[in-house]
Length: 439
Ligand code: S3P
Image 1 (cartoon, rainbow, N blue to C red):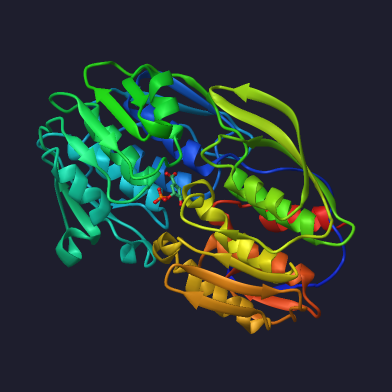
Image 2: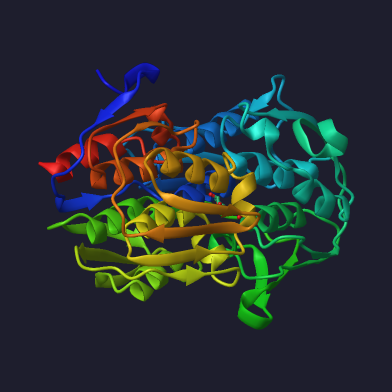
């Protein structure tokens, strides 16, 4: 079958998209539910956990340290028997974080304070190229001992658990992964810890840690200042994971772009630290309705209805970046089909994601004939002229694979996508959902 086992996937251009789709669970929330459930006391149950490669990596690492987690299968509730704040055992094997930056970075924070225990973390070739000093350096202010290649920056990493002390930590980048690592370390430090971010990143950790019973205060301008006091016991919870807005983004853009399309994406998480994609689609003049707004287990949720219509070129920069960092690849596709020049700036973080997403999107879309300039911190895209079908490559990046699929639908002529199976990192049923919406 095309696209299976690493064979290239043929993608027919044209057609339209209709119907309802329920995207899988939010990846960020899924990782956190597993991690916090593991260090809570008692049982945690998770409904809607993302059954994809990244959360499976988190669960596999936690199991190697003595946590019992039920199998992660689509549609099944996941149960975790928590081992308590300091109950993780020293693993006799290397912790393999796979492709998952969130697993590795949050794990560093979780393990740094496990006094007297030794941990080694690694990942796939992509993860072994990604910067980890951004976590190790602030953790060292609490007394953490994290070592690795390139002066502690690159995995494989070794963590020698220490008794940590509370500290005031200013994070170098607005990164929820960095922030969450420090919050996890702070839970068992001696004394309170303050984390101050340069800009407010996604706040799922703050919301969920409080729900589990952590003593955590959020303050400052736009919630950029977080205070954690150690000593509280985390208690197992029932977590309901909403659909991932970063996965919904592919259908939102496709629904707006593809002639005649009309799609409803159900049960999407609408946490305001994640909804930058909706702000940009609105700026473009896309027709999107939010239906059934509700709150589910401490996170806002709704159904998103999108239909095709004319779109305007757009510009956005650093200010919005934390709210749409994972949506830049699909927005770069959208820009190719808007009349006029679109400009994405303040996006240098994209260079240290699963791939260098600015370079990869520029390279792949150029192969389709797009008019794109790559800048150090972003892209300029002159849209409105047709893209042509081409030989494309996800370059192993899940969000690139799915973005190129949407570009391919809109192209003149068919495409072929190599390494399309990368989508399974965050959205294992993406290709099936695409086929279903096209029928
Ligand atoms: C994530 C935070 C973001 C995002 C990643 C998931 C998280 O990374 O790109 O996909 O779950 O905390 P940064 O925090 O490094 O920006």
